[in-house]
Length: 210
Image 1: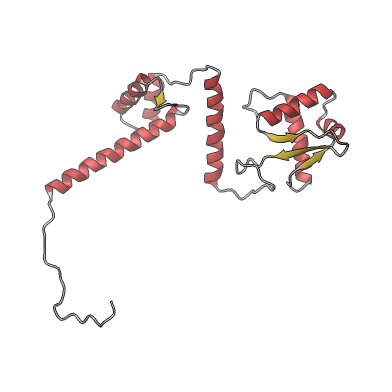
Image 2: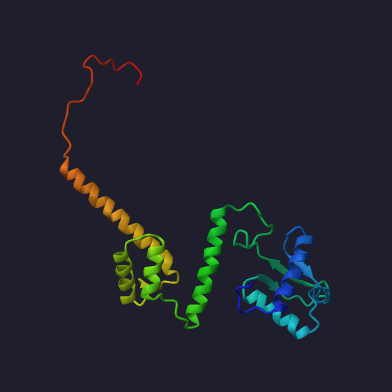
């Protein structure tokens, strides 16, 4: 939330109040919330502000809000961010790989949002060189990587590259595998295999189990 520039203190206060109710409900969905109770818990005194923040939390994918004008209250489904999917129960046993996947998904969504706003995500040549130096990769590969994607305006096929560092990792990995394959090919040509006789007995009994 601290990195989401769309949120105000009212959004955060309202979400924390909802999370408290969700906790008390043993992380079961949906929550049935009465407006006055939630406004009092989140310290939001304006009905307009409350309604606006709740709808925007829904639009920003922090929760799922279903307005209900019955006295029983509105239905709100909370999302379990430990798995990245809406669930009826929070599963706190996610593996490190699952959590990392969710974090990468969030980072890429954030970069996609910035790209759609027209912000420049392309690295400079010096940034690429510094990144290759940090990882102790060849300097020449940094230039090749930069000028290759600079010529495509940082597109891989039809998709905009949102995380150029991940693309750099893939670039160096492909280069490493290519060099290994070339070395193996040379070794194979230098040492051709020799045909030999099979070591089998002529008195084999085919009734014996293998």
